[in-house]
Length: 369
Image (cartoon, rainbow, N blue to C red; front, side, top):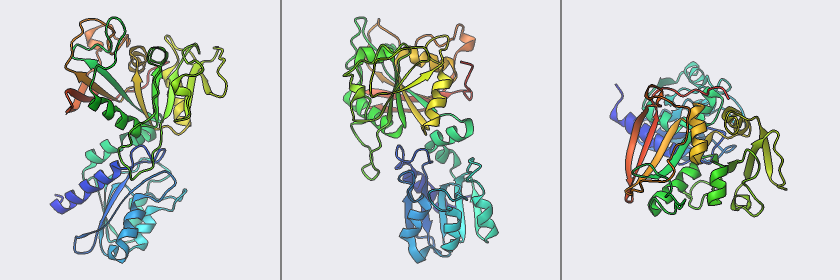
């Protein structure tokens, strides 16, 4: 059984890893804590940005000679390959660390093997401490490696009776300022923010991040993606076309477009709109590992129908409308036995609202386009 000191150090490593969310893609977020031979913390670090030093390197630099004979607590198995940076397993060996405890094994075939390298060098190696917590914090990258597509978080804001707008189409503001600020935190953690043509027409959204949650990491604006099948929703002068963040317009292969100076990706059509698997493939090829799906109900329905929603984050306001569009449109579910069952993982008050986070009860897999 793990000692409390081990649990405390690994929990701190998990906290550190979270500080890199939104800045490390296509790499994982990783945290590291190093204690000296007597168990005192002498070094901490986290992976701050892709191409920069890994968490272990930051922690080793802080620890210096005190790392020798000590223990390294790492949220992900130390890498074993040379990319833009050297292998962390070798850095730990050279620093004289005698024990390495890591939470999650590295599923990347190019980087795995660090544990074996450490053992071969005489280090004591342990795996699995706080594995569930570390995996949850790194779920976007792990999903991309395991399934070859981005992690998809569907976010919506609705009244208590599930309406996202009134009958006349007005929707500003259903939820509170606190909830809207929290959404910017989700955007800051995502590689791409995706909306559909209905949202583009109705709201002219900006989709860039206004508030950066952690000033220690460089602000990395997400890719703004508009799924505009017929290439008619995004007009010149749209807010999403400014220079605050990069933008990609996804249109059908046979659609015409008059937009100049805007990056466009052409994708095959599906039964309704564009092929969701093809869209995710195109984003994954661009290095996108996490997607924040912001709407609207038609696009959300297409993603649910495709089995491409990994997490749902709903902001529920203590408001009743009784009429107006629902948060989710047709998702290909015709009977109660086909309902997508969710496991609620968190409920939190955000101002006057309630934020509910849930994941599909069964592991979602992409269905045919």
